[in-house]
Image (cartoon, rainbow, N blue to C red; front, top):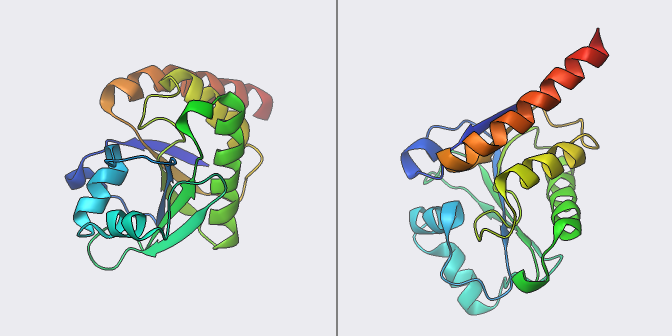
Length: 174
């Protein structure tokens, strides 16, 4: 599996060539922040309108597919409800990420960008998020390519964790 990074910047998100982007919406999250806020803007406030209408609210386990149309570089935007941000912890990260990956698998998506659970709100550190991501993604080998949407400073904290995992994996392959 190829794991890379893309910053939460519209110009950079426009250049990714993935089938889908998957992000988490927490209960009562407003205004939308990070990549999801940028994508909402690019989609003309479509996510915001869905929230205002009550179609989606960030409730735990909620799942929504929004067609990417021609306004974004990917075909599908998947939203996963994260529940109350105050109840978010490492176990919730693992479960929500597993659900995100499972949804992508069921949709036949093999190449995607992910906004890791809790990262846009700063609920989990970059290094801890990467450790947990690597543990969960091992159970989803059907994904060929994943780009993590992270700011450059977070990428710098995540890269050593990813490098250690790659080194450990290469030891086992030999």
